[in-house]
Length: 68
Image (tube, rainbow, N blue to C red; front, side):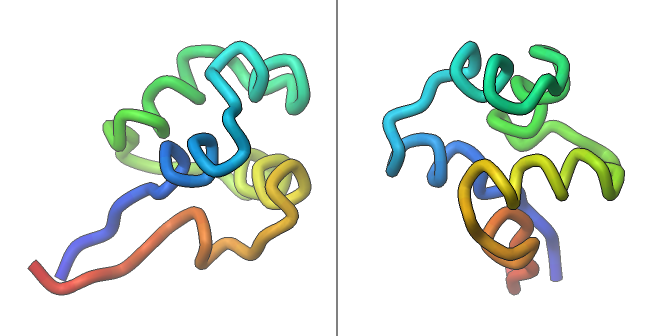
């Protein structure tokens, strides 16, 4: 079992780039980039909350648990 971040998929659907997400959420560009490239080791609640509000989705739409 593993976990992956689907931020790149959500950004693609809305045609957002990292700069767009940075401007709309106030999250750091580094955090957004790491999430986009699925390189994060941990994510805090406030980050998830801002992304859920921006993409009008639930946490499960951003973070996915899957079988390898």
